[in-house]
Image 1: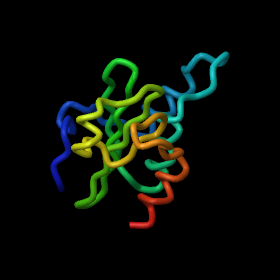
Image 2: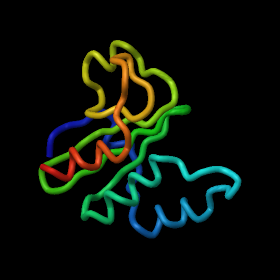
Image 3: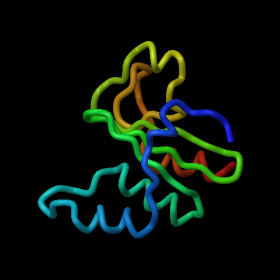
Amino acid sequence: MRFKINFHVAKPIDEFLINRLINEYPKQYSTPKYLIFIRKMIGKGWEARLHTVEASKYVFVYREDLIYKIRFSNHKPSYLRQQKKDSDFYVGISHKGKALLTQDVIKIITRT
């Protein structure tokens, strides 16, 4: 498995936990995209880990020797980190203009 920064500090998320997090999320708000993404990827046979840093959520999905790091946030990442390709995909806001949508990331990852 390839190295990804902060993979070791991210907490494993299984199907039971992701369903509990979604069910317990306040009903007056829509379910966050990172939770929906994790549930869909687990349903497609991937394993997942979650690392939270302030308002940003870093989701790692992995299977066999593949691992992807996806950043979910509503604010721009550190410019230097994005230049160093700290994450494989950015959902939300990016320095490079348009960031990807959750469904786009799922399509790209599951093609491999």
